[in-house]
Amino acid sequence: MAASLAQYLAARPPELAKGPVAIILCEDQVELGSSFAHAERAGFKLILALSPEKLQLTEPPAILRNLIFDTRHPEAHTRAVNAIIDAAPADTWMYYGYNAEYLFFPFSDSRRVGEMLAFHSEERRRAMLTYVIDLYAPDLSRFPDAVSIDEAMFDRTGYYALARTGKDGQVKDRQLDFHGGLRWRFEEYLPPSRRRIDRIGLFRTQKGLRLLADHRFNLEEYNTYSCPWHRNLTATIASFRVAKALARNPGSRLEINSFTWRHSHPFRWKAQQFMELGLMEPGQWF
Image (cartoon, rainbow, N blue to C red; front, side, top):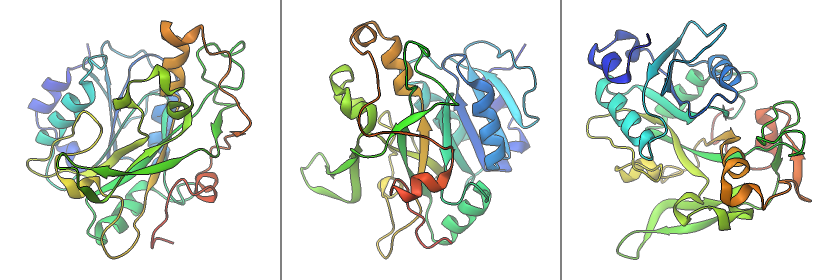
């Protein structure tokens, strides 16, 4: 029987201090193996795979810990991430995402996530903006769940940013709301709170840090895309999550015949492809 997340964290496992740690919330059984393998190849030292029931995996990575947690709860991401923040040592780098999501960062085709985060830390940054780029299958008749690793497509254009304002109506410094992909093209099927594609997917733990429901943090500097003096690294999360939801939900599945359009482009599973399209920023890292 797999331990629960609460039981695991109560034991204060020393391995939480290794970092960087990948937290993967498993909402279903889709592409579990590829999600874990991708995180391992990226260079994460520990993978916390959270799931409502024990996962049935044939060859799980040695660094994977399957922990029982209700990932289908509407606040699953905040409950899980904040609990792990509280249990982990300060200054531990973490990533969080979902199954059928894949982190890419500048030069990740040949370099490891630890190298990139070490440089980011040297630039006095404690978080990194990530863009969630929707992946989808080209043919829903052949791939009714909208997922295809071998034939994955994505939108090469149609992304834009809007100024982010606070409750006082003032524009926030170095913060933008980013939009595009399936969330933009099929926005009528998504509530306004879920139409943004920005997520602070990489962050460093500290006392009092809290992940918010909208994928931002309670400390405003964590939500900025760069420091005040120059551009910083950003990364990309290639994700089938929205495509899966649109293909599955009763309100959209009978209305959408295809996700492809004139700006669909095959995904080559290379970080360089995102860099060429301006979908992530190498900053000063070369």
